Image 1 (cartoon, helix red, strand yellow):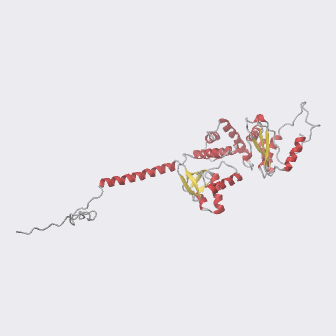
Image 2: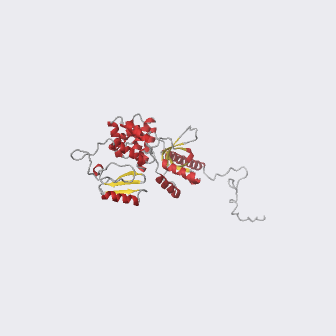
Image 3: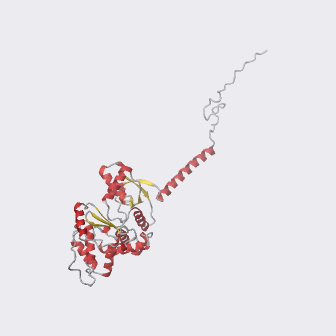
Length: 369
């Protein structure tokens, strides 16, 4: 009788030890095993591609709509891309802005448009944010810190030059209180640049959101800009009341503007107060002398006037000429500003020229007034 052969126990790890992609039971000709279904892999790759494409489109749309903040090198920006509406820059305000950026960084981005084909290497044109760009450039000049080498900017793409100018004006109207002269000047310059076909269209386009009365006053200042822009040193200091009075006189007297130009050219002016003095004097010279009730000139027993410190003499300001609660503030001399609030019956003097000597002069004048 044949002997039975004893079978050895099954090897539990026999199948698990097979190389990945090979059959443990097959020989060299066995087909590789698919660990992932082909359709699932294709679907995964398609989903990833679609997600990346969607993200790219979102970023492109955000950038095109001016919703993406980018960092741009300072020397790549042309700040003269548009004629600026701001004429002067207050040094105290600039110092405060530089201090803020130095301690907290740039908080609000500027607005730029892409430029093409520039030989000077400028690739961006400034729309708004001239003060912030200037502050960063001055900070970078002072210490060359890398944190000041770039500026945060929104890239916008205005549909036209008109839209670009409107964007600049509206941004500045929100952030700073431009004078009527500065507003009128940008309207004049935009017309000369060919941005608008007529001066009326320029005013309506740039200041469409302003009340009609305000837009009318800006239009009146256009006459002042066209006549005196070449000879004025401190035009932003001209108040609304003074500017309208000058325009009214120019309208009534065709030779007034020429006489005013000659006066400005013949007199040195190192401060805004000196220039305002000349403008006020030109108007005062046209006023008839003060008369007494019997129409005789005021002579004889008139108390002598004690002069105030040197500086321009201002025409009286009556409370009836100002809106309720309005505070009138004007520069009356170098280092001396006068504030007047009719409703509160308050007059204030401030500035570096306010000292003990001025106080004594005022006391003497008030006693003999």
